[in-house]
Length: 374
View 1 (cartoon, rainbow, N blue to C red):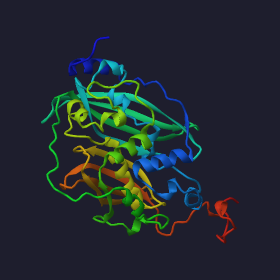
View 2 (cartoon, rainbow, N blue to C red):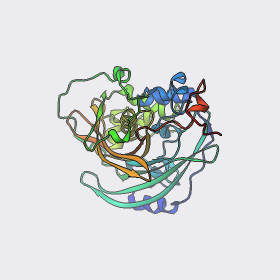
View 3 (spheres, one colour):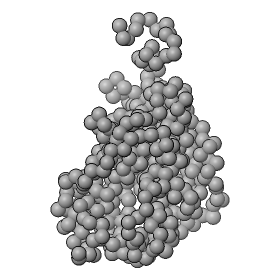
């Protein structure tokens, strides 16, 4: 089998498979263990997703998945990395990749007990150029996520940069000698809005979201995401230049330099997207809904970088009677560089809104006047 070594060959072969879905993966049932594993991998200890007693009394009256759980259902990148090309035909030593970002729309929650699966489809490829990497391709894939009721849960379109491997890291090391911060305690210390509703009328343009410190990015953080959120599976094959394909080879600094054009070990791009979704979810509380997010990765997140997620309100508006808010969020490293940014749209409850299903889920019958159930 001939190996593809040029962008021209890759583009031609990738284009042949556009708009044709990839083979389907098996249905998977959402369990408490799976929800907890993603919680550990993403560093998100929101009790809506891991505390059954808390969730029972909350808005959905059951454990539900966090918005970023989509990445655990399906990383969603095979369509943009390979399309329909056999992976063994393309070596990272010849043509490497960088994750550029994703556009996500959420339609409904993923509930405990749902069976879920996804459909990945390569949908586009275009030429571009990078100052450091030269000529490149942007390959775009779409992933649609469904539950066992044939309901569309969410859709994600991601973008992957494919380029000729320069054989060395092209990004410079950090310039600021910032203090190192242990990431684990920050997960436990996080304060969330939780059950206290944030009403649309109480939000103003320019409001800042409470900062979400993530601490110093460690190899443990990389492996927690890789094994917790993505997969516990071993690689069937090992790329040239490494013997360790754990975390996709990212934890091997020499492999990162020679095959992935990074100066040292680095993160999965979607790991930062889970952080961007988390700061929004923590701010909006249990009563809010994250409707959409368009995220772009600006620079790599390297082992040893210290990160904080920040955000502010860009716009508040009425949409067909719903209170909606647009926010801008970003991951900022110790050099005050934004390594990832996103714009997200949130739906918030109106002041004075009540739960129309309070009678149904209450342990007693509250005095709410006429029952909505007749």
